[in-house]
Image (cartoon, rainbow over all chains, first blue to last red; front, top):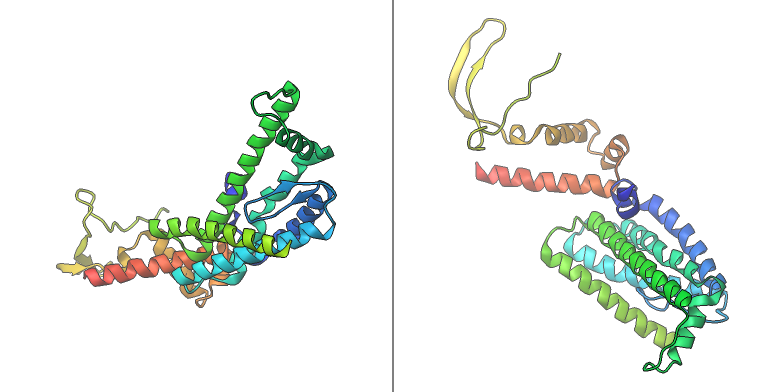
Length: 191
Length: 93
């Protein structure tokens, strides 16, 4: 079960993962619309109000495209046998935890609380204990989902490229950061 | 009947074993000498089985992947690692 959750790439082929990833992207984008989530960066998700139906879809298309191009470029430099379908399948499936993360904003709770907290005087914070507990639990779940996302990306990339050396592992982390910066720049340019 | 497994490493120092005696099962003629094991014989049994499977499937990684029930890149990585290992063993000779 652990292997299926964190490393399905050893058992399942790029095309199968691509099909699951495509369905996940469609459902995840619809969840983004339903719970007002914006995927404004490859490792970002923020809650807002009145998110347009098309926005989560375009966000995900840009994120998937940037991650795919950066990871495939790096993958191809370390192993010429790297198949684009394996990288694309990895990227699309790995984003599944993000889509599950949208569920934390049911009834717009996180968006409302975040907005309320932004306006608070930090020296005189008074929060309802129940709200505070929900925020802490939600933060921990979000953190766990982020770890799951990175683990899926890393394991998928490792199988697709036969990644082995420590230098390449460090460069993988650098590539993710570069992709994040590129996605942030792209979202600033577009919106 | 359980078939005995050919030992490829010394149980004492883990060095590569050599063949020192061969015998004919029908006439019981024995040949003594000092012959190094061929490169492929120096691989563990499961890696030899993988190479045999690769050969019998006509070199189709996709066929092996569906036979073993693992993904195509996993099979390809296993083969690439084996090629590296065989190359290393060949240069050690």
